[in-house]
Length: 143
Image (cartoon, rainbow, N blue to C red):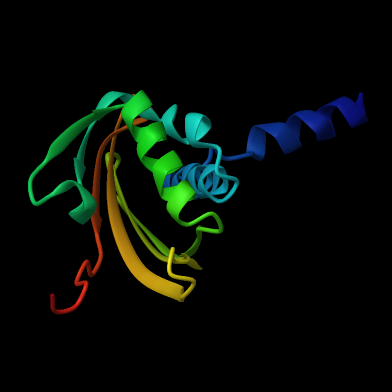
């Protein structure tokens, strides 16, 4: 009986995951899929269609389906087979947003190594990413 009471006490004292812990787990899973180049699993973390701001897509908001997301990253992998992201900091912002600061690294098609600082703002709805606003220096030098 004493053992059962102790077990009940331990489980009743456990607090639900905080927003920061939940966000951290989500971001870790997202970047784990990215670094394993598992584009279909990463794309499944998005709503059926999500809004993107990304210099590679132009200057406005572009809607993309999960299939388009997976295809975009598969094309990136083709150009940069060793692409990997390292999370620097996670900034939770309320229940619907998280800002992630990270470094993208890899070998460019010309054989040069790169490290690109990136910042992404994710917006969530019902546990899925509905918006992905990504910012980085897309300056490619003079023509």
